[in-house]
Length: 464
Ligand SMILES: [Zn+2]
Image (cartoon, rainbow, N blue to C red; front, side, top):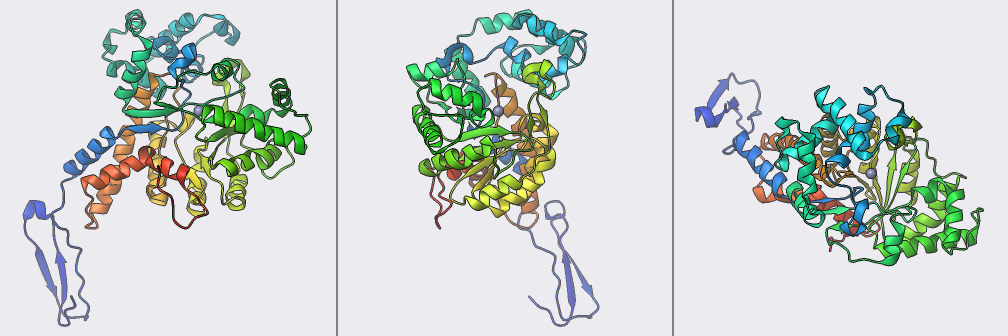
């Protein structure tokens, strides 16, 4: 409304508290009326927080990247206190304190390694790192008394668990619907189980991991040849056709949802390297034929300290020019990406704004800490709205699902509360059903839409 005689400044100060509006009339100096925004019955911050918390806690998560295995893989599925303690995150932390040559540590049994790690990281020092806190969150959620600090009684508790039942109980406790495995035909323990065949657990999905194929072609050529594929070390047309046949065979055998690879920071594309040629001439044609997304995880520096084995990998800032090239040159292909370096996150968000065939997911490995999950999730919501997947667990040990999701849920709740409070400050009101819809998108729904999306079509497909 325009008042031509007076400048009316209407200020409403906290209607919930005062229940009155103050109207200030100023001397006429303009024919424009400025009116402070009106807010209809603002919801109390506590109510909003509780509604978001309900949505975040109740929504079952589809965890799109883990290193867990279907229980049919037997001992490949890691679980229990000793596997939790010898997780490579804790090994790296404990060996900072332990006055022990690395090779002596690796000669010990798993139980002895776990004893040393428990002693150093939980008894000799307070367990405040994210990895250590995670174990305590997990034990506490499982009903174990962390105050007793009694490793052997914890071991006895796990020893009495039945693995098949433990799987479903942990998934339920973690609020996780399904987990996606990382499946590698190059793993000599995993491959025979696929070849033999088994009854699939309905909550374990699959992704085809192809790091050795792309990053160690001479060795992989030899292996493919042993498995009956007519390949030579030279990447000629016949060999590339056989690599495609290999991808088709394994994609079908395991019913892979997508292909994935972790890449060094200096990965180049296009390039005359074996990795680039294989991607261009075998992986992308396969993804084009099948509609499978290609997940890229740039930023890992393998073996920075080889003596630490799995705990010895580092991080490096990646050049994202190859990813920009891929998204622009292959608009009909879909790329799901998580970068390891914190410093790559902003450029990635901007790239995702330019290319709808790029889906960002997760806070990976060294970025899977509360402070960085908060920072990265905040940045992604501000630049991408809800069109990303804020987290995957990357769990290697079943029980880690509990803490990784509990900690991430807490941070995601905090970020969403800030964002929806900002919305309410404009007068916009988000219903509880809309909150649930949005959280479902973040916890797997948006990734499912991306996987079913045809980037070339004008109308996005709905996930089936
Ligand atoms: Zn991983």
